[in-house]
Image (tube, rainbow, N blue to C red):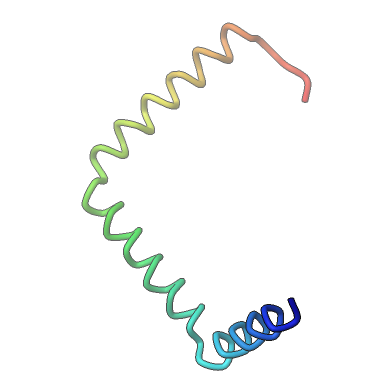
Length: 66
C-alpha cells in the first residue's frame, strides 16, 4: 500500500512541477469553448426551453421556501 501512496505523491509532484494539470485544464476549456461556439444556436434553443420549463414550474408550484 505504501508503494501506491508513494507513486501517487510522486505523480502529483510531477504534475505540479511540469504544469501538466494547468495545460490540461487550458486545453479542456479551449475545447469546450469551440463546442459552444460551434453549437451556439442549438444551445440557445435548449436554454430557451429550459427557461420556459422553469417559468412553468414556478407557476405551478408557486412560491416555495428554501
